Image (cartoon, rainbow, N blue to C red; front, top):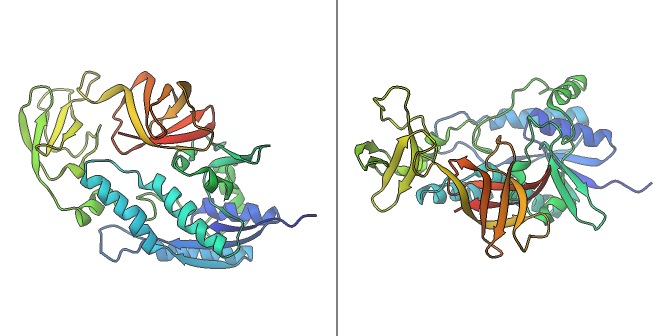
Length: 360
């Protein structure tokens, strides 16, 4: 019998990563658990940051499973790779996606590198996604079996090399079954609620985070259809394409609400219009993407595939036309709403994740 590989499980204190450790332990792997300390609310950003409780929950599960547990301090890497990415993006009018970047830069970046240096062959997480080894020695990544919980979108920016060292032990388990397994095993966090908020920043709201780190830069709110000045905004970084809540401008028209349709850098203007299919800039059928990443061989010619334009949206048919190794033109079969610059388009062939690009 060949010895099974040594795996480090990223344990967040939540039930998903705890059951990931449980499953691997039951399968006979040599495992250890580790909590990534990526953020402490040292700047007093408003919002709960329950990292101490999370560490205790993760440690409690590790003790129940009889596995070694460590706390890995990646605060420096997190500030450098994620916080700075967020602030740089928002300051130039983009809408960054910290959860997607966390997986590439932190979980399967800095944390994976630390694990390899400690002698682990792979890193396991509680993602709802499935990884399969192919006959040619490469790997394929598929959606999680529980379509309501599928998290393949959040893995869209990882590299093929990172996927080789990634393990997703719960990707085939429906969430209700996972809760049952946790309860059956008597895990201390079996009934713990799923976490929300910015990736690894606890329950901090994005608005509060931005208010703490990006200076307000007021400017005009302009109606895109006729150029009328409607009011003032506090800073373009507080708004994203397609946003309806929090604009602060009453429509004064029955059954009509204003929606953000653009940001104009020249005069720092926030562009709004009534939310309708004819709102200028809100819907598009063709868009350019850049910073392409692939888990397969990149297509060299126009190819039919599917895309998930944001997390929770269903896959939609599209035509991918490469312009270079880094950019492509995407044409959707149906118009898509509010594709914000800086956000991620995940590319699929059926349930298989092919790669991704970022909206220009």
